[in-house]
Amino acid sequence: MSTPFVRLLQQLSAGFSNQQQAFDNPPLYAHILVKFRPLPQLAPGSLLLDQSYAINPAAPYRLRVLRAEQAGDGLIIHNQSIRDDQRFWGAIDDAERRSQISAADLSPLEGCAYVVRETAEGFIGEVEPGCRCMVERKGALSYLVSSFELGARGMRTIDRGHDPKTHEQLWGSLAGPFEFERVDDYSAELPAHWLAG
Ligand code: CYC
Image 1 (tube, rainbow, N blue to C red):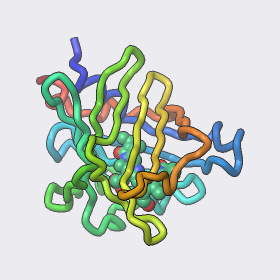
Image 2 (cartoon, rainbow, N blue to C red):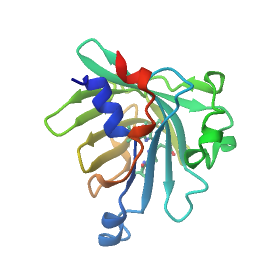
Image 3 (cartoon, rainbow, N blue to C red):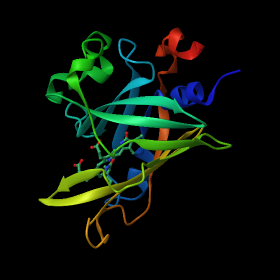
C-alpha cells in the first residue's frame, strides 16, 4: 500500500515532452522538455527540475529543486532556487553532478509552492493562495497563477502572470495548457528510505 506522497513522487520522477503539441501547433507552442529527477542526498521528496527548450537542452531556462511533502491530508511541493544555477546546467542527465547539489545551494521561492491533491488519474497542483509568487518579465512585476495536472500518460501545465494591482493577465498561454507526454521514467531512482514512511 503506497501513500499519496509516494505516488506523487513516482508519477513526477520522469521526463516529459510536448513534442506532439509543438509539432501540431506551431508557432503557438514551443517544444519544451521538462525533467524531474530525485536528489537522494537532500531531504526526502527532493527533485531536481530542469525545463528547457528542445532546441537547446544544454541551457535550461529554469532549474529548481522541488520538495514534495505530506501536509495533513494533502500534499505540498515547495519550490527552491539554486545559487549560481549555471553550475548545474547538464546535471539533470549526470548523476555525479546531481549529487553535488547541496542544501546550502538552495533558497526557498516564497509564495511559489504548489498545493496538490490526488485525483482518480493522478494529481492536480495549484500555486498556493495569496498571489505571492512574484515574477518579473520584460521589466514588469507580476504574480504567477500556475497549475499542473499529472496523470498516467503525462502532465498538463498552465502558467500565467497577472498584474498585482489590476489582476489583469499580463503574459502566459492564451491558447491553453502545455500538453506533455511522459517520455522517460526516473522513479527507479527514488531512494528506498523515502518510500518507506
Ligand atoms: C514562471 N513557472 C514560473 C514559476 C513557476 C512555474 C513555479 C515561478 C517561480 C519559479 O520560477 O520557479 C511553473 N514550476 C512550474 C511548474 C512546475 C514547477 C508548472 C511543475 C510542478 O515546478 N513557463 C513555461 C512555458 C511558458 C512559461 C514555456 C508558458 C507561458 O513552462 C512561462 N513561467 C513562464 C514565465 C515565468 C514563469 C514567463 C515568469 C518569468 C520567468 O521565469 O522567466
